[in-house]
Length: 187
Picture (cartoon, rainbow, N blue to C red):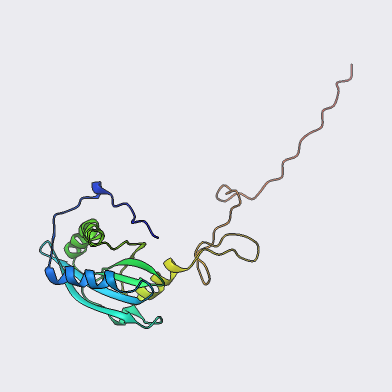
């Protein structure tokens, strides 16, 4: 059983309205089996969260980037691998005002989704919907341990690797300390 992530009340919950069709779509999304792959697309405009489209019971290998708008800012609720991911898709070429509205409404959208009984396991933000499937897979991949026993952060195929060794100062080579042996003074 997953606990809902705490939503920071100080993050600025704005009293947006949720269209009835969006509430119904969220209820349908919530009632589908947790093992089914699904997507729900929502938009925020004029302080109203509205329903755009949904695809429930998709095949496990479905690619989400082909199902969403490549030109409009959207919130996407995706269920894959038993987890629910909230994706904020904000194409780079949108006007800065649209980006700001979407960004400032994220906490409110998360709260409205939680109010409908849906627990969000992960959050992802993408600038190009083409990046969406890769970003989701990175989030869902379990951490793995490489051949040397070093934690590699993102799982199989991950491009981030971290080591647990002590960091060195930038530009300095490791130095070997030698301790001078004590010699008695001769009188």
